[in-house]
Amino acid sequence: MSDIINRITGLLVIEAINSNPNGNPDQESDPRVRDNGLGEISPVSFKRKLRDLMELKEGPVCQSVIQNLEKPDEYEFNILESRGRDRAAISREMAGKEKTTKDFDQKSFLNSEFVKKYWDARLFGNTFLEDGANKGYIKTGIAQFGMGLSISPVIVQRHTNTNKAGVQEGKNQGMAPLAYRVVEHGVYAMPFFINPSLAKNSGCKPCDVELLKRLIPYAYDHTRSAIRPDVRIRHAWWIDHKNPLGSCPDYLLIDALMPKRKGDDPLVASESWADYDVPTGLPAELNSKVSCADLMQQG
Image (cartoon, rainbow, N blue to C red):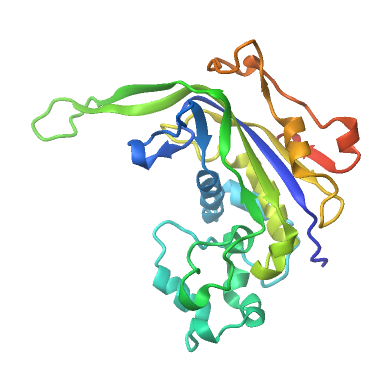
């Protein structure tokens, strides 16, 4: 099995309709919005959805994406950064029962059961293993997602949630003032990058990248919630370079696939998908340098 991973550039084009694509805990879970009115979807938020899908081991998405996946026999696809993980327990697991973390060198670490167990640590890196003696191990992964930013400003609606059956003793009706906070309409662009130069540091293999590729189309469809009922990945552009170094600058590819707001005033919030001009592929001069596919169009 070849361990060669070529550089990859990606762009997610995400549409939110009467949904909160990413709540801000510093603002009572309001949709994330910059001072200039542009909406945000954080990289952490998107990766969380991928992790949640892989934690549902018996779920249809996990069962489908791991089917016929070519991988080293000992590699597993568990999730390191699960909700509520104990950092001390993870450090003990990494070191082994009779070793401390300071006894590890990079070679032994890459051959450890710890690396072979956790897909998200191999791919994304981690925030658990950066203290003390662990500073040399898997701090940054090969796959990095950028901030998802809306093309035009977004309008946030806030309404009170009600509950017919009282939620407080002595009350006939429960109410949560302004708890329902959604974006009326927004189109967001989120770039992502796969840098093979870091694969040797994290133990990442081609199977880990292939799993990410298979998983992306299901990120929102299979993680819907009451406050996020209609968030759609309209396009998931996956661009394979011809070698590990890269065969075209990332920014040229991203600029070529970026949606553009129609009309004379791009600072007016959109009302529908029809308010945008959205590329359907790369121009010929760029397409000859890479292999470009829309994951949302693949069966």
